[in-house]
Image (cartoon, rainbow, N blue to C red; front, side, top):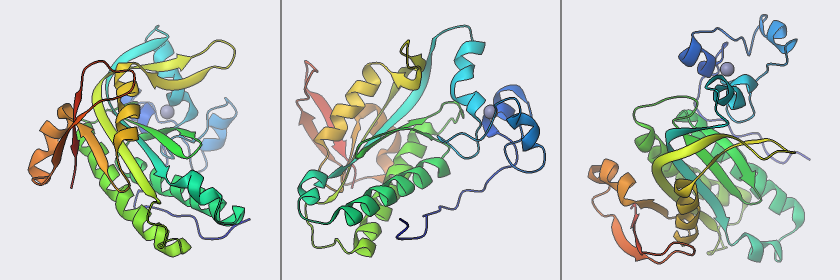
Length: 250
Ligand SMILES: [Zn+2]
């Protein structure tokens, strides 16, 4: 079933893997005639970012001889609010389209800013910035991706004809700090980021309202000039002992 055209951002597709090139100066072909050669070794385009290869997803951790590598990251969680309510009110095809379009828009916004879409968990998305593509402006990049995503999702709601559903929208949480990136699990190995920064981001996202971007002090201090009307909130978050200062970017 294909209801609409796939959403594509402005990102340029590259012939070689950006991750391999930046880390090792290795020209791993992911498009074009030479990509067939790499595919014979099982290296192909990553699903987490179209300009990276599958080798980059997991193997940096191995090269560094650690299972999980501590890296400075910015973590972004986004999810659809009002999804469960909506699922009882509209037909499954429409719901499917909403989810499909949400994933597309998340991916486009995150990729555009050199982040990777690590996971889709039901109606939520986990994105990682500053790994494997190292960017000095990773905090700023994550915030820009979030702003873009909120804008795109508003359009999406209109396009699909769901504007009347007031409680439907996207909530986003962003935090930055050291996370452990690598393969987690023994039977089913899963490449992801773990640690307190990831947990706090997930809770923060839960505290964000429809259409809101909720960030921590660490994030806000780096982008505050752009958001003079941001609202500070003392948040009590599940599983976190002290209150956390959250900033709703507006
Ligand atoms: Zn690569």
